[in-house]
Length: 74
Image (cartoon, rainbow, N blue to C red; front, side, top):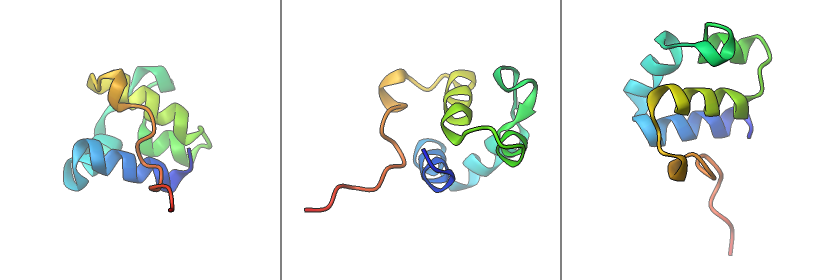
């Protein structure tokens, strides 16, 4: 997962406005008590940040896979 895909996934799951709040304000224990934004700035892989955010926010596993990826081209 690329950072751009992470951003799309956050927007799709939480909405653009709330997604910004979640990534900026929610402290994630799985990321050593950093927010998603802090973890990304410090080089944590976007995929790992996405999984930690989903776990903390109770996103069902069925909605964690494949989000943020561009639609396949015909």
